[in-house]
Amino acid sequence: MNKPVVTTSTTDHQIREIDDWWRENRDKSPDLFAEELALAFRMLEASPGIGRRYPHPGALVRRVLPRASRNHVYYVEEERQVVIVAVWGAIKGSGPDLSRPK
Image (cartoon, rainbow, N blue to C red; front, side, top):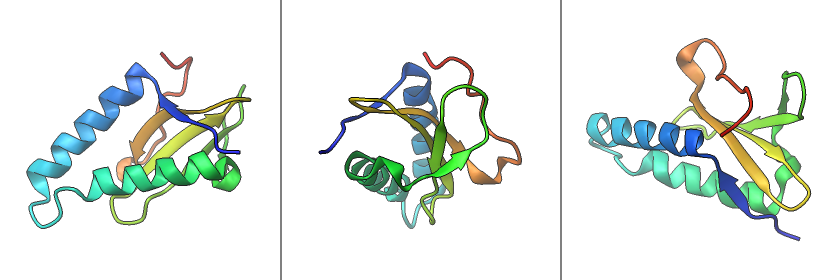
């Protein structure tokens, strides 16, 4: 059974910022981030357990890493849905703030 993938307002903001940057700075593949993110969402909808566990107190957070754009997709699997709690650049050197998602 597929679970819908939903985002938070914080995550929506992160996605917009990354997508805007990608389109302005990656002229040879401006759609790559959006395409990889859409593929990650489809994969998580069908198989939410595929992600690697990410150390975080509280809820079980997992993440997947689209290879080309290198932006981790952090998520929590709930009973009826998959909640994307952050989309964060793998090269930033530290993880995102995963305090109570908004």
